[in-house]
Image 1 (cartoon, rainbow, N blue to C red):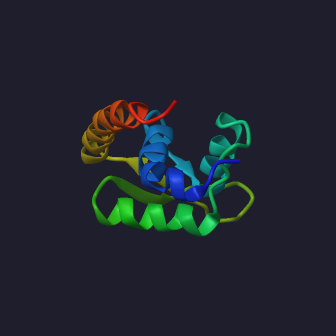
Image 2: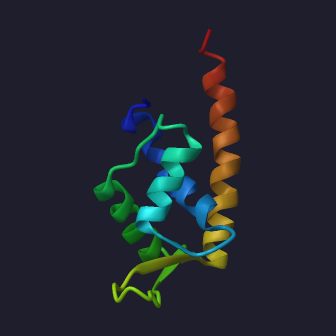
Length: 106
């Protein structure tokens, strides 16, 4: 399991990646993170929803209510064009960070 302190700065990037192709909701995003990392990173619900709030406040995602057939209202999130630009910027930043850190890893 990876420390949440190590990956905290990448939560926004991870979420934007998962929203790139289609809108999704909290539980589904959490589940995808768990599956894609083979259970090495399990994002806490409070961390996830804090990230949603921050991303939406900054204009990187928008939220809307889905039309569930089971009567429950589910909040979905969709990436914006500004969010796509931010994601690309964060990816570039990651590559530079990785290059620097790898100089100190044996």
